[in-house]
Structure formats: C-alpha cells, structure tokens
Image (cartoon, rainbow, N blue to C red; front, side, top):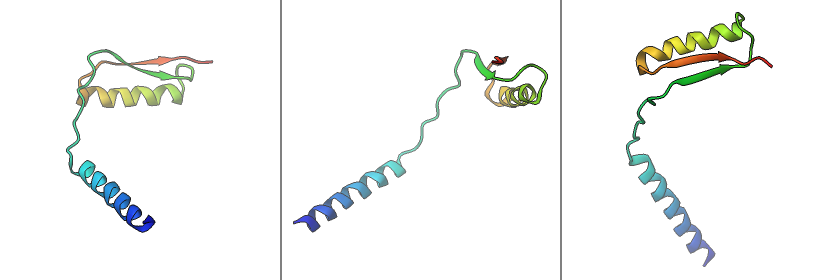
Length: 73
C-alpha cells in the first residue's frame, strides 16, 4: 500500500513540475514610478559611485526614472 502511494505521489509531483516547466514566463512592465536606489554610505565614496553606475546602466534599457539616495547611518 505504501509503495503504491509513493509511486502516485512521485508521479503527481513530477507531472506538476513538468507543467510548470512548460508554461512560458510572463514579463512584468517597468514601473511608471521613480525607482529609488538607496545606499547606506556617505556621498563621494565607492559606495556612492557604484549605485550611480548601476542606475545609469539600468536607465537606458528600461526607460525608467532611477534616483540614487545616500542614507548614511
């Protein structure tokens, strides 16, 4: 009895995984609002420059408005 149940459970899991693998992924739209990138480091350091480089790189392909903010502790 337990062997039959295990085989059925395995078959159910594999068929559900197969159906998930076969469905196409749906892309989400870029948000219309401003995307804020927050950096916990003070202005002018490497922790400030890298988020600005990332924002500049993402701005062009997405067309979204990105803003970097520094929030030092």
